[in-house]
Amino acid sequence: MKQATLCFLIKNDEEILLAMKKRGFGQGKWNGIGGKLDLNQGDKDIFDAALREMKEESGVAVKDMEKVAILNFYFPYQKRWDQEVHVFVSRNWEGEPKESEEIKPRWFKLKEIPFDKMWPDDKFWLPKILKGEKLRAKFSFKSGELIDSYEIKTI
Image 1: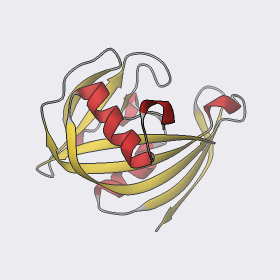
Image 2: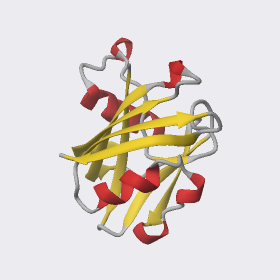
Image 3: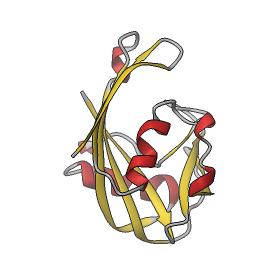
């Protein structure tokens, strides 16, 4: 299964940085910043991939981050989309997020997260990690990017 990352910057425990995906997988949706583990880009592990993707896509250098979830996504109608996503949260970074070819970043109040413009699974797990829970979850999608089934466990 493809290995991928998502990283969320949290400012003053009041705001979260989301990124509007401008192209590729997830285009037109708000999400965290991330991408695929790529050994050809020098990634030694999933942590390296998260740091690299954040720097490449937003210009931000994460100083430290915490792994808060592992999410498995299954798309039986499009198997090449299947992926295991390692989710990180950071409250310590350098730089201001900037728009790139991949994303348009924007800060949202934690109580104003635009779940209606995100992947449908986000509303099930993102509030939990923002409350400090660590998770392992599985989501299966049916055509139309609709959730067919899911399971969330606190770890």
